[in-house]
Length: 209
Image 1: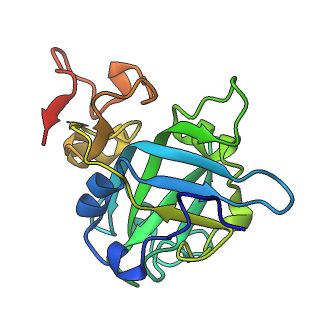
Image 2: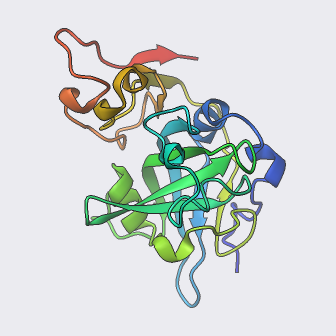
């Protein structure tokens, strides 16, 4: 059963765009997880990161086609769920098209419904855990239940920074490919040293329309 107000999943062609476009457009959209016999979980996306295929040294697609990257290199509009640091699942959406290896990591969200008051979604691991998204959903078609993305109901003001925790990617870590709702209190708060490549005098988020 689809929850009221978020029944309509975004269509396949919505994802058929560059990860940079989809990452910005996802901010403000809703992720819905309809679980059998339980209240659906609904969260509003407030933070994303773009990953742009094999040439992007921070993207898993750089390893080519493996068991882990099968969903990443597959059709757009699917879930790519991977395990990191031996403890966290992370939820991504694939985009652009099969073979391109473009995806968007959902880094944080605002709880909307189905959560208890203690739930926090401010970080990729917390988001996936709070939304009950595990590797069992890797490769799931996001245009159909039980997990889908619904359109946003307004255009938020976006803040932009380099991505988090990818300093190993060298100059690729410095690209401003992390997008956040500038007014949300639910964005993640990583240490400044984890944003891009550490350097003295790094500025904070820059607002963008």
